[in-house]
Image (cartoon, rainbow, N blue to C red; front, side):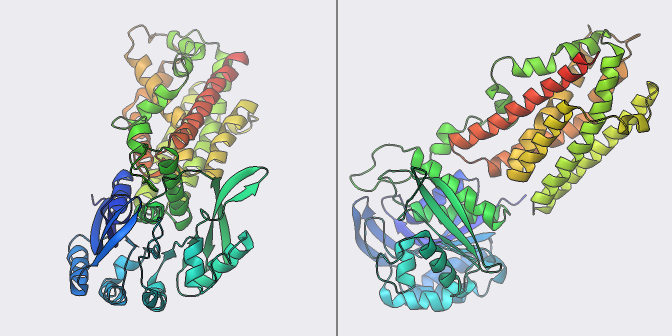
Length: 504
């Protein structure tokens, strides 16, 4: 399987905080294979740039050919280009690889964080006239936007100015413009915010990405990191909005989890934050989610008195009958959630994955109807049963996570059902203390311990691991959000057992 690939075409930062170094650190942190083309070598540290050596033009083109003719790429990030000749050779060489330039993210590097000029003024027009015409996403900050538009410094003062500037920049060629708000913090309801604005030229619409403003001097390489993180998202087949939001989350986490003082000036971002704060690093995300639950929640779910009543056959018949009717109604909505998940992804492999899960659910529902028939309950009886408030609370929570969150949010909300029933089925079936002969619920246990159901649990496990790799921001905050969704869904599963128990 080919991993997601991103090519960065940029300069080198001897201090390791920006340029190619920041790009490759970002890609590695986001589990993307990064290749690189060097355009310039800089002598710099956190205090500034004291020398730039531009590589021979033909050698820059040779590097691009070497990478794209063999390794290929799913997205390209372009940073420091320095001269007219380098811009020309980059554009001309890329023109021979049209498939590689579909997702071209351009960070118009002109001035470093420390204030050093990294692009000659004469090269700016060439960038606008040539490079912008093939650009998918342009990611300027406010000073860069002013420079590109020929505005006086400080002209972009308000969000209305940002909206106008992003549209004017898109008219130069880019399909999308992300005008970053780090230089223009906004105050709303007493809170200082950073508002990045994404403009979509095809629909003539804007979207604000709002986050708390992080006050830190360790901002060296922010622009390089963001553009690389967005390119990494695009390489993973995220749509533009998801890639931008995920990239911004990565940068926010890298800013918020400072590694301390590096140098005497503007320090670099922390690309180790995912290694340090990701609780499931090196482990199964499923295991980490279960271990994240407060004490006893998972055991209260899989060892609930309702489950113990199934195991020893003492559960009241009316409780079980109410439960299995509601469970069928739940599965209808569970299938809807899986279909919603398939709709939200543009990756055909992921869509096929969800399609397989829906087929598993369909098979489970057929078995459900057959099992209910053995109890004298017809499908019509099930469908004529009003949906319990417990059922409504649970299924609407799952669907709401799918409607308002990303693919990971939805899958985590669905996870306790699959994981829990899979564990319960195997546990009860293999437990010698489970009553078999004369237990009216034994077939229910067998159904959930069966190979086909366990295969569906494995599908869901694999999907969770893949989504975690691509969608969980590497910040502790994002992980906390995912754990909270898993906890709420597990508590709603417990309430589902309580529903059956209380009805008798």
